[in-house]
Length: 278
Length: 278
Image (cartoon, rainbow over all chains, first blue to last red; front, side):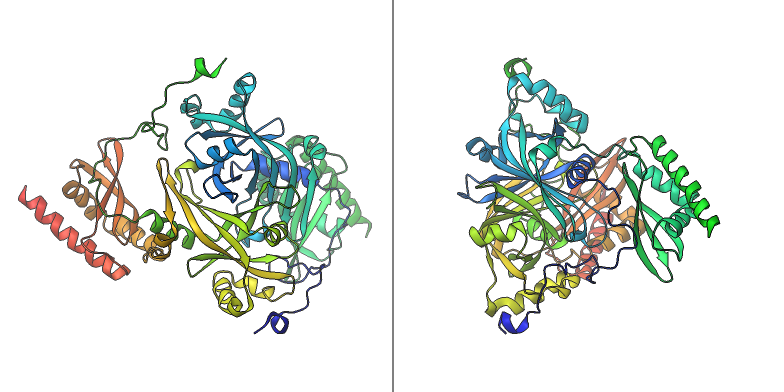
């Protein structure tokens, strides 16, 4: 069968969702504050610790070559501790053009998860910066201290020039260097799991109240918090037999778990006031 | 500090182990039959379903570009279903040189896990092969049936020319095309978890007996099966307060769980005979 007869018409805006259905109507304000793609990418990188390093193969002339590496961040760039015997090191010594892909791991459709590609020149770290780079790397990978000083290992740095972020189906953009350098990982990253567990275990009534009063999901009977960041938080709300995503924003940027708690309490009070007015 | 003063001497054979220690003495026959690197790599690919596709970037001229893809196998080659809007597709349409990295996921030191890089030309699948390629892909990724026929999606095939397999610290080689094409995933792959669970739950006495009689670990007090394949199986044996890896081979190649059971029973009988002779 030829393609012409088997293929359906595809329109650019009908991007597939995780379950293959078409995009649902949003139940919350589309303009709610949320992290930029640069911030999402920075947070993903802070959360993960392995990447695919892409180099230009010496052996397979001109082919891009993917290899598995551990990494750390150092002043907005990725750093690696590489063996001189490894293919990627031979490749970089001949051609410094590189990129690194870092992909989120998790359940469900893998294409719904986020990933980021950092593109730039990847060069061996020079003596004057070696100690500070080593410190960043060992902080992230303690066991590497055993061989960090071996003669056949060297630190390399991927100097980030451009960044491609893909947050899942249809959420993607190029991030430029200056935007990248002025962004940081979400300050709640280390605490978000604890906050989410606490809210779901002890304050599920508050989550329902948020949805009923601050989103279009007035009929919410149950809600589960799924995500929190400095600008707001996300829930899956059950409305009749369906579940819908809801994102709500904080009144002000929060930087600590305590500041998040204050905002969440303020919003419950506001939600109770709104309910009592109806 | 200069490198010369901070670096220790590194000898090629002192590759780091998972915990950073030097290589321990083997407690079993080094020549026990085991899968080839080509077979390990085929099995890893059959087990996983996501890869990093490495292409040559059109936008970042000449840089290798890593992106996240799902894959399936089709006659020894990797196949992908790619959106024409995606960066990797634009890259491949301009330059078909590619590779794909597939990495095992799991606990512990990520560098102790296995990974494989497949290098070759990655080209759009032509009409005469499209239906058979589509069938292989949908078998592996059922949800892709929703958009497999959309106009802006196309199947691509990475025609494998060379393969780099890394089984963990110090276990690595290049696999050539003919070796690759004559190898297959381990036939026990789908059943190995069940066999391992069964052996550990119901036959831990047999595992101890194997170690005591068929390896150098005569003092084994406890053993846990960790792996099984067509050529043999692996255990972690507790000897005094230490644990050591043991691999034992089957007398003949096994292709089904039933054949594995027969070999394991035969070996218990043999082990009991050996014990009674001492």
